[in-house]
Length: 507
Image: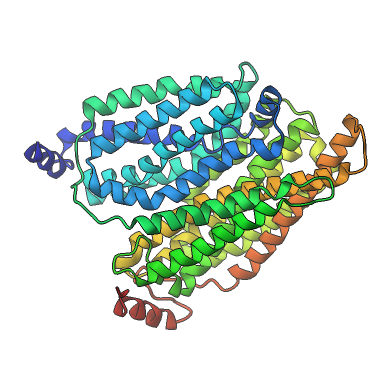
């Protein structure tokens, strides 16, 4: 078997092996597309689910938030799993977990079972994403690797962006359960194809897993997201349950302990030295701000359009379609522009567009027209494409080679958890604003309910505007960085990189 493996890998660049590599990429990308698609597939369906299961928006948002949160907290564990188990074991296990979660969610009788299915789906996705990258690095020759990784990037950006449109079309004719039933056969086909065609192309070892670090990061990220997501549970006067503060405190303390432990470990789960580089830290902050805003808007907007403006699920999905398509298609274009002009030429206009778009969404009278909503959503997704790729690439370029894996892990983890945090915080703000507007109204009618939700959405958009303005200020400090860790504008960045490489972590 080992000899066959090595033969397959070494010959992967030969013409006779290209079809098999193409099949391998097809099964990996199709599996990843379906898995990542589920991050946003339920966004448009939340209103229908809320009615069927008799739950409020604050509870319903956990169907999306929990998915991203589980992926975020499990990414460090997945790095260990990729080294510990074979390619076939991990791929088949990940896809079987995803299929199991899909069936649990599809047949769920109540909210608790539904969210349990989502969590099982997310566990499979968390293993699949890093595994896909490792397989591509193992079987694709270096001269073709850029194109393959470009396809991976396209899937990672395009799948969540197209989720609301696809679900809107399905929901126009079928119930929300079919969002899971239609996915299940596709997942089953990828499992069967992977069973017959996928070979073991990664080497296994027995790396040491620091269980304490995993526990601390899980409690930390989970506590903060759950705590902030629970802020909207208060009553009409905006009261917050006392347990929320304990959860937030536990999350913050756990994250601090996690960081301190990573600094002391000889082989950390996440090397915190990456934050000693200013350009990488700026990239992380910008990524958090933009991801929070993107996933929050993709969650708040469909609820507002359907419950207040009475858009159908199909109309809601269609108005979000051009933005989703362009977001995925613009990423390779932004990559070429970044190579030619650097990050500032894209970041400053991109964040300016983001600010103006949020201001546009705050003009509720404009949202009566689906065409205006479509235009605003399209500009929003283009601005996000102009910000995310340049800031993250520039930040990773600033790191020395030995810190690339840790920088990627940090960005991936924080991107998922900040998406979950953004969704939880914005829905909580919306729910809290709605509760305050309804305070003192004994039996609110449809008009009062719509006005209250509009007030809550306005509060959420205002927080998004503040975050975007903060991102604009931070972007002013971005300088172009060479791939060797140097900076065109500030030579001291080279000294930062040298210091990072010369000072390893201590036991």
